[in-house]
Length: 242
Image (cartoon, rainbow, N blue to C red):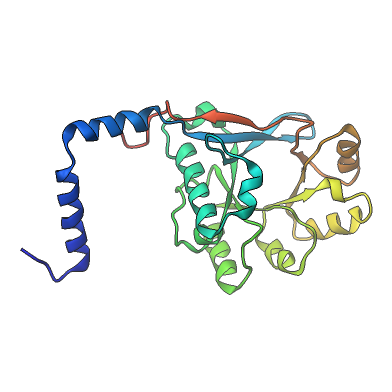
């Protein structure tokens, strides 16, 4: 029997395909998925007193090379973000890797606009706006909607570009690459905190850079001097709802 409803027709087709898969093949696939690594990287964001304040989670996969991500397209970034969100909030033992702290996850435009889903965890998820996001009316409206839902927003790699200044009123955290602050540090920092955001010093790689960031008034710090990103395998954690 056919249906005039395209969605119903697709559902019937999907059910037929599922039914046609031999049970042994389905079990073999489930066992394969159960043993496939589910990797994420985690790096701490620390307070001025040296205590963990939050964690940055980012994409990793077997054989992943960071330089290859520079050639990624929009869909690649969206899939990577979905992977990180599923590996963290989609697993039942979140606290095993989060320890009660905020989780910063970089999200592309589709997640800001609601075209792709975000976990309903504004208490824990800090949405870090992708540096490639087009800053237009739709993006700003998406950020306003997310903040109304209780999410906190982070703005990374702040260098005082005009499009970044448009995002400042919506940012709870502003991250600044402190390696670039040796010449024009004070003006950039002054603009970054102009709407009351908490400042995060990124790429703290040496004691000198850390001291300079402290002198500029940063209160949160992230970088290899403090903690290198570690890779976690989330495959052993039960999926939420299973």
